[in-house]
Image 1 (cartoon, one colour):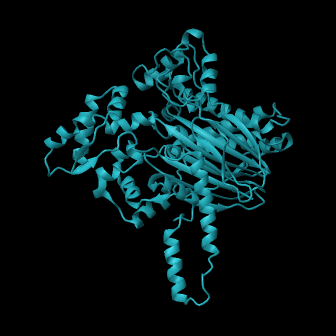
Image 2 (image 1 turned 180 degrees about the horizontal axis):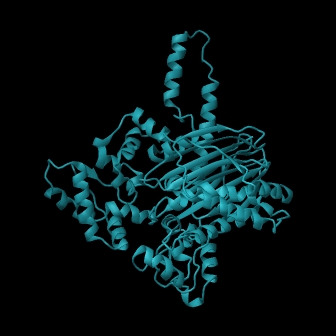
Image 3 (image 1 turned 90 degrees about the vertical axis):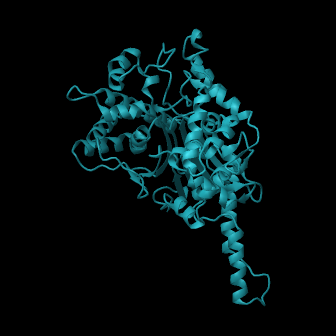
Length: 521
């Protein structure tokens, strides 16, 4: 995705509001809604090219009538009924809504032989970009009793997120192997035997790349050889494994993009590293939970003691300009005279929102390497302004270790498309309500022993219709509430209109949303 700030993304559609009435009057009443929208977008865009001007215009929005409806919800346009005001004619049925929301959901009960602490996980994904730039991955480590869960938020295209989602878990699984097991695994690998380091759980709609597998296998084999020289020990062993795996994969992607066999550009490799991806990965082994995060995806633990309220425990930090520690880390890595340019307008070199990510070699490669490889391939100079002492961007994750307790019920991993709509506390509360309501549905007791079966059936039907959740998959439940929830109630019209937005419009209102919820034993 093009990682604009949320306000700037919304402003792309809603700016120039003061000129909308005049634009609307000039449109023929026989023109379609989408044509009118395109005309408005184009004229408003030309009037407010500067993002700051767009935001100022958005914040100074005055009530007006547009296409026969009052538009009077300025700053939080996509969080209110603004979509309904513009797109009321696009409403789809509840059945169609469910078809869209259920399309990519997956729920898996985990065998205790795979991991003793994970009971089940549920995941779902709703695209905004076309093609979708988010990716997800879930796998069990074959040679250890550990599980891996990850969400990957791509930007500038899906290429980097795709490759990272396919390869990172193998790097982690290989790095985590004990020395003797690694020796045996490497022997099998070198002899050409089929070596599976992880067992994947995949939805039929999850895309799997079949290209460049030979190159991937070669890089992984070399990584395993190098691992023989390292043997992490101590309490921080898994944290070291995760950090090393992230860094090594990012390095391998960079190296592969530069290598060619016939002197031509490595187009696929360059596409991968010219795009980028944030990653948030959970490693679960027995009662140890590790979260490795690079970028602005999030991991949140849901905890409840007895009948106490739910608590949301953050197990990741956003790596962006709002994180003071992250800004301090970045500025300390560069000369003092760059302190005003390394982060400007809330972005890395005024351009990139996340301060850690895979790929994005424009912010990592030296100027000479970019002149040699990127500029000829891209056809123009792609080196950012104020680019003096690279690298400015790293893929090294921040790792947080948590020892699981009986009160720790579940973990939510999600890309920022969900967190744009829900706070961590609200997300945990929704999952908690999902568990509670699911239990209530299963433990219904009629208020009277004199009730007939017909009366009981009617009561159950009314009760089910009134309850949250409306889904069997809690990840779907979170997405449904994020887009259709209003003050603890569900607004189908709002959700339906949001899901009805065409591809050239929807990105202005929301991002791709990917959610995985892991339930513990």
